[in-house]
Image (cartoon, rainbow, N blue to C red; front, side, top):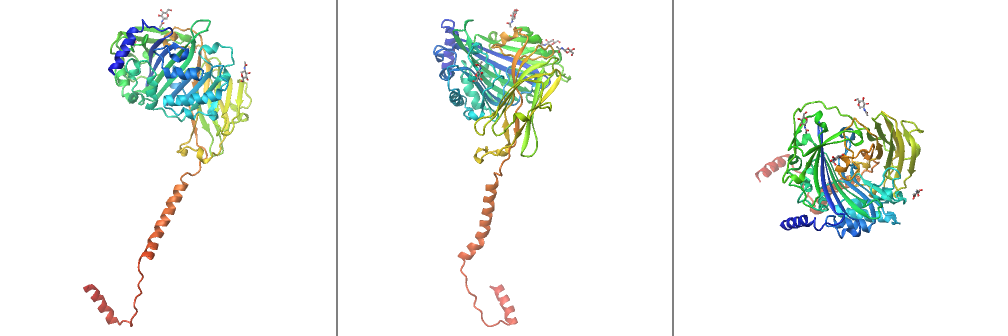
Length: 557
Ligand SMILES: *[C@@H]1O[C@H](CO)[C@@H](O)[C@H](O)[C@H]1NC(C)=O
Ligand SMILES: *[C@@H]1O[C@H](CO)[C@@H](O)[C@H](O)[C@H]1NC(C)=O
Ligand SMILES: *[C@@H]1O[C@H](CO)[C@@H](O)[C@H](O)[C@H]1NC(C)=O
Ligand SMILES: *[C@@H]1O[C@H](CO)[C@@H](O)[C@H](O)[C@H]1NC(C)=O
């Protein structure tokens, strides 16, 4: 412990002297109260490293990741492990959206020829690194999205056909717990000894309504010619606390994480906390201590007021908010685009998946919807209905790739123009199939998860909603950005179906019944086999007097 501290201090002291070109580490925290009931905390750790030769010349970036990236020739990687469901209509938009369970998508370098083999190897390696069941990613649950995802890094400018280098898979059943967080924290330069990462103890994190950890790697151009690239590793944590669980609306770092913040990570070049104080107008609160500055973000026309703390100015800090009025009605303005997804049907033969997309904005919004159904849930394009109609003018483009049993999932992508102020309902039917008996999970009657649908949208300027969708790298760069639109990828909620399941309790019942029969038969058989049978001597008939006499005689004995 002491050694690591000494080492950290040495590195921190020497880093200006030993400064390695391209190396940088930043930590940021974004806190957004979502009255009346929730609080959103988002942390991001940004490591920039010289991308060549698996980080041999970097003192900040984790070597393990560097080796994975260079060995599998990864251009861009996104991995999230999420527990819970983000509620877009109530909470607005998160900084980065994530699908429930595990989600992984990767762009490989154009030099990779056999992408599928590389993808399988990469997911198995990541599975070992993060102690997650990513090794369950196989061809039968992997798709190659055509329109819904686009790269964010240097490869977005390349002229190569990058869509064919992309693979996407989600495991909605994956459960996220402590053993995923520990290896994730080990990748940070300060691990969990200093800086924001020291707040992340699993006891407090797993107490939340929603938590998601993620790792996002991309290549960044060093200069405008883009001949040289750096690697950016963004590690993110998103938490949603319920005020009912912390028992009060007054929050503080100590209440949320069980401890105050012990200063910044000595290796970081910047360490900042942003508190969204836009909700102050309807739910007034006071911040303790006073923020270093207040900035106004006018990104895309929506105004968001942020209080900024520069943690480098503090040794030990505990930011807290005290609310003044505690029983006021808060009018929730839904964000421009909200969605809902559920399963239709009864019985065990046919069903349907319904995705509802609501455009609450006054102008049409173009979106790409990606439906991804496992092979055991065959969806047919011929059953696609939009607002109940088979032919719809809303579809501008579509892509459908039918699945194959045990080999390939069903994949449908639709480019839609959502009319203003309406809800568009997309229905597609499926049939139930019988699985082989080994293919059922141990708790087959629990049901089967269907992953979320992906919704990609270029959100327009909207003045009336206060959320901070962020796609740039640092929060800092985003606050001042003034692009008129936000490209965002959302995930709808997942769903669950119950497939026709054989009666797995049957063998148990048979064993019980057979055992009972054997037990009942055993007693008499045992009696017959082990007892000696003695013949009774039959003498002369006994007189009535003699009988009575015998009774008394027995009693005497
Ligand atoms: C990219 O590759 C896909 C299939 O691999 C192909 O259908 C598509 O036409 C290609 N696009 C370009 C621009 O080459
Ligand atoms: C919220 O508004 C009140 C006045 O309406 C002001 O006194 C207070 O400082 C504001 N809180 C924050 C965090 O800015
Ligand atoms: C904002 O809301 C007001 C009324 O609440 C409405 O008149 C105005 O058109 C809205 N603006 C936008 C950009 O949606
Ligand atoms: C945003 O830009 C203004 C000048 O346009 C600058 O003064 C301010 O420091 C910038 N804020 C951030 C957070 O970068």
